[in-house]
Image (tube, rainbow, N blue to C red):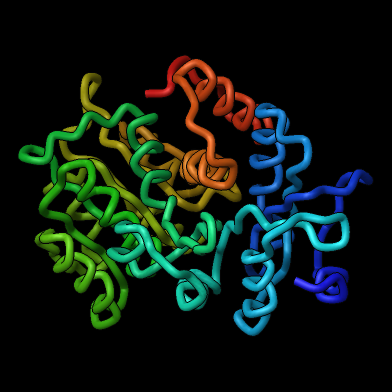
Length: 319
């Protein structure tokens, strides 16, 4: 990337010192992203003093110039080496054409949220999946695929990541609830690729199904407030007891607790915030951007440094 191109970038400088390497979170809108807090805390913990991380408001038409920067061979004060990109909406599919190779997870989901260079190649990955897996495990989920009935709420791109995460946890049958069943084609295609049996159900049936059939775990991929109407109708969770608390991951985390989270807990369930998903997907990005392989004790320290940056409770272990 030429110096002129770099100077025209929409960045948010947060230190006076120049960096030989930078990473960015790309998307639109991006002003309220918590990714900088997570990544900066991580790089401080790892001693990566010359790696900066900024927000950059980006639309698809901005990608060509940015991706030239990912291939920049050297880092200088005028044109820092781009160590990685965290990619949010509306770029998760648009960025794929600029990657030389995709991870298996990115191929299955058809979405990339992580871009980073390795040698002469630019690689694309989807760490949202491991973020969902680890968030559910943090909530205490012990998968029992033959006994449990897993469900996803919503039918967008995040629903595909949720489906892939549930598949990684061992679930071969998943129910997906959506308002517009005719828009679930991409989710069904992903299910076919994974070999998952997908049941498509109208969202209107979910409150009653939770009472009569029960679902555990449930991943709601709906945006903030989109679940408020049906959540207010929630009148029970089948199987909830003192020894069994069905787990819900609500990907929306602002405001928190959501109407859905409050209703779920009031009916005897366990709730995990989407902020946990954001944390764990960012942990994977940090390791990819830095090329680090950490021992468990150091990984735990990294996770807890990132937790402190966004006011999440510290972890006792990495599992």
